Length: 336
Ligand code: NCD
Image (cartoon, rainbow, N blue to C red; front, side, top):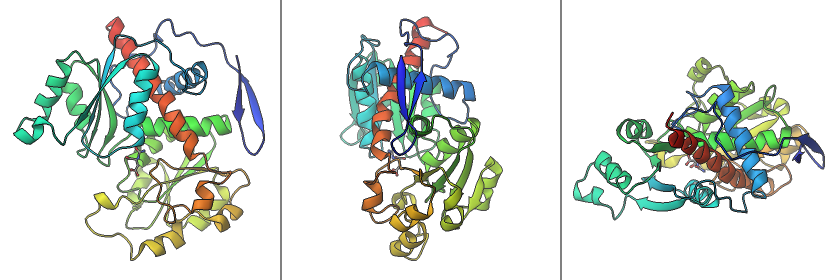
């Protein structure tokens, strides 16, 4: 199958990929849960990305249905707000023929004193095969994985990790650049409170990218250097050598005190605007996990402009989540 990959303004790279075979799950994938990217090897990350790309192609860009997971039931357990991630997991399951069930903490028996583990065990007892969990407490998915027999997927645990977001960001970069190794990727914004930043750092570093974290010193500490990333507080200094910018939202809801004097000042120093795009590489790729705050980390014209691949990321989210569900269910079905 000839797959066309966008590699910049108007250019396309034709990649010859073998037609995908979904008749059996790959034998080299042995994980029954997806909890973080820190624990995955480069080969495992590549396996998810290749599977996601194959599913993207096989479903006409995540539009069509395949019946790879008929008979499977996936439950969304979201204890924090979500638009993209929750919808994307539901659509991914349904695109593969699985049933979905939605749980929200408000209106549940948690308010009647039931413990979190009991709630999850009761959902599992309804013959649920996979639980997708988002929770404000870091480590919640890991705790569930120890207590449940079904597959557990982390959809964001506090400021810790958001592995499918990291994977979809990396898949989008790979589609547009054809590779990850050797690229310089800057994560700009509220690194301290961002689970997306952590998953991106682990994933991008394992695949050979140079990662820079950039933002005010109150949100980007020198300690990030211990993870092998470059730390800077000056976006204009690093801008000319970046291939990709990942603009992270200021997570006011996780902050006890405001980390800078004003949002206006933040936008002046770190917001991506037309003037900064003009000083960046010609083919700079602008990504963001969403939700975006127009006028803060990105101006409207840049968000909607030719360098932005923010909505491609959203579509790719379905592909990545289809891949994760299919890989995990393959392991569960063969029992290894
Ligand atoms: C991110 C999240 O929830 O961590 N969003 C997302 O999943 N698409 C980032 C954010 O909320 O800013």
